[in-house]
Length: 91
Image 1: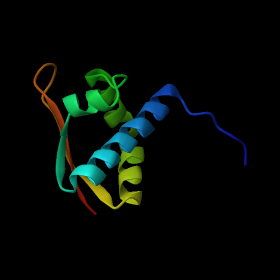
Image 2: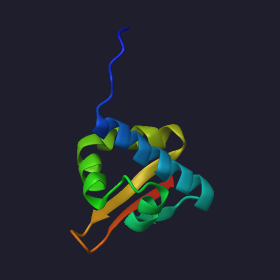
Image 3: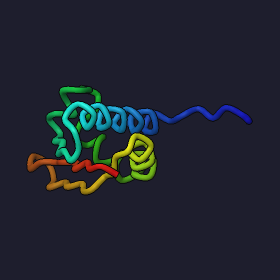
Image 4: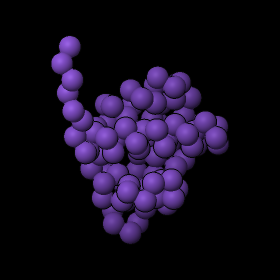
């Protein structure tokens, strides 16, 4: 099988999934994760990038969470400066 390089967006989506999993492992599920928590975990994840990754790579995020026994319950994006939040629950 040939190697397919991941795009920068796919790499960031994998990083976002890994961070959400780490937070859910540490805090326990269900947990609500805001954008500030994600930014502390990785400054590369700007609110704009998080929103774009969620819209483009939601399938990959949900698959990664599912592999670890979590599910994406909800995602809320109230717009610039208003807040963004993921809700992660047990599968």
